[in-house]
Figure 1 (cartoon, helix red, strand yellow):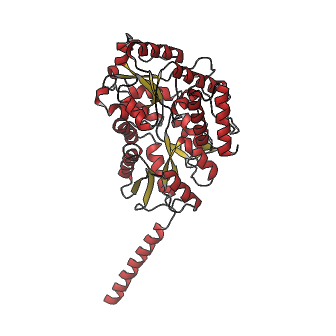
Figure 2 (cartoon, rainbow, N blue to C red; figure 1 turned 30 degrees about the vertical axis):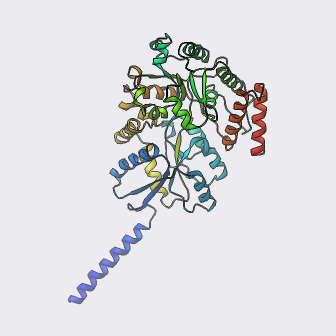
Figure 3 (cartoon, rainbow, N blue to C red; figure 1 turned 90 degrees about the vertical axis):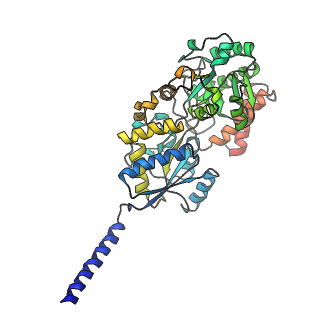
Length: 435
């Protein structure tokens, strides 16, 4: 009797284990599955994802997420994995917005269509959604904005006899900015803008503010537009009037900003950390909307530089879990999620492009580090709403490099006219791409 009872108990136990094993092999991921994420900046996007995971784990305590700092060669390693059919790739990776169209073109079956997974893209800044869209499919979860502004040193304005209060919140044209810069240079000797001459960013900001594109709808180069010609003419005028403090290299550019050598610069909200890294800057900077180029229909006082978004690989063994992490934290307006966006803005200067997050307190608060406690995040968020949808195409990088080289040669007098500069950029682009 005892042996029969023992056998029955053993059989029940075996059946329970078997059923448990079968259920764990079903369509839903196990709660102990590990999701792997690749990104590259411990103080910015890696930090932001850690905070997102903390929110996610409140409702999913058994889920583990491994966040890997891939600061070196992340794109090369992703390409190697894609060419190997997904071998060695993470579940989620962060891509710079200007690079993703190349990946979507070269590897059209590599990413999960997140629109099909139910993500509501009307809740994100429209300009972010464009580059991640192919046909009716949308592949990414937008992360941060590169909303831009004109950063000005109010102490140099005062030294030049200019009242900064008269400019607070004002939409300026580039003609007005040049006049302002000439006054500052005449009185203080400071060029208006720190400019990295081997970098494309500033010209990109100006062209995009016109609503202009570097490529046509068919993907061919579009450097002969009125928007591009006016933008390049503006840069030549700034250069010829001595209003650019030119340096080579990112570190020298940051040093120029933080060593009192210029009266300002043109760039994105993510420069907050660099400006704040120097305590002596406190109270000196104010930021105005991106200046407007006159005479170009559709131009606005808004532009963008940078930004990145999250993507899930189809090769992921934990697709459902990875999608759920992104969708439920980054794309859903719960109180915890909105506080998450609020926190990463304050702690890391990471301004998300999830529109409901802009109702949070840190998006509205003044910042005592800036002139008269400017509500910097509120301003950048409002400018972000006017950024046009940007077209990068798979050939954005060779275009960027060709234009940067031609612009520098134009400044140095090696190319005599705008048309010559454009022709030189087109020639280099064709040599690299064959198009």
